[in-house]
Length: 540
Image (cartoon, rainbow, N blue to C red):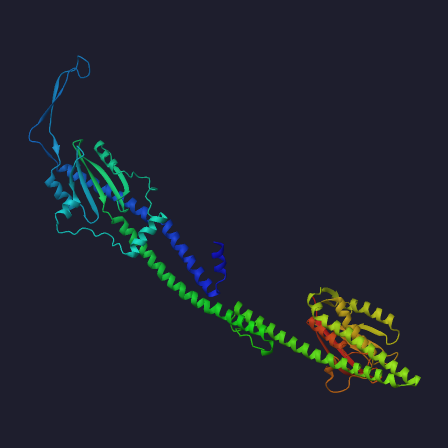
């Protein structure tokens, strides 16, 4: 059983759909055949019908009974009751018997031999008439009822029905012994339900034949050998035909359902396997987005996933190339300095080379630290916990700490909407990292005592934070490049103090919060610089 269950669940989805749909239909069929009361109801109706017919026929036979020519005398003995007061009396009576000739005519007119068999017994329990012999033994213009043709299917049907107990008669609470029918000689109606030698169900009803309160015989009406089973068989064949038609419809619908569900699932699975086995092929996932069901949703999800996967692979490849390029510059400088150091004799020149070596090592160290930070950032942003935070209070605390650490380039925070709370769902540590990077970026280009201005406001959807410096603005026309990895727009005085990853990290954090970061140059009176604008979804 466990092996069968395992094999079932290893089948393809199409086979499972077909098997389970047909299984439900088969269980329904078995339930109908098992629970149906048709066979029992048929037997009950036959019993009622035979009882009524037997009463009519027995009354008719009684009316046709003939008496003997002479009379009989019955003498009461005066001492019969042991008293002297009883006078001797004589009763004259006649004997009545069943007229066989009239009986044959009555039976011939009142029963259908294809359905019923009638047997007449006299008062001594001797059979005097059998309608089967009368009709079929003498070939009276009626053909005997043909039995069910036992072809292979019907033989299998009979055996199957017998094995599963659908033809049982023992739950009907009727006598099964044919001999009990002779109790009719005592004046009672008797019912027997049993099977013949080939297992066909029969119903028998016996009724006494009474003439002037005298029992002159009894009648036994029985169903023919296959009368009940033939009707039940035809009824079950009708159910089976409906089942076969329903099975055919189920198979067709299962195939349609399979093509609707299993086929696209196979296509999606095959495409996903091809992507797994050969990422370079960049195979497209089948597009079922027009379907407004789970298959369409799955197709969209897989397409988005593979698109994101390919994009991430491209980013990793570009990132790897950028890392190689950025590491090659300080390493080349470091190698040149080391090679020159071995041949330089002057102390001042050697000190300069040592400073170059130290700067290159520091740059490599910063590069490695930032690369490590950005490589872990994706995972951290995925699993981080986010809370509902007042952005103004969060920035106030951060700016106080920054102003305490850096005395020059003080940061001023202002907001334009008094009494308004600026709530958003954020990860506080990552959010602070964004502004630390922006402040560090501003300090790297600002002169001493220049201020950094932070303005906070909101609209219907977003909390808006502007960070303004007075560093003269960003050079060039494509200023959005400042968010690219390893890009730097600083003066030549500080080329090795920054890795060019700070703004890229800030953008990645803001976008993970479903926000937007942008940059523009501005001019205010005598001041000009860069303005970074951050928009994050507002809560509440």
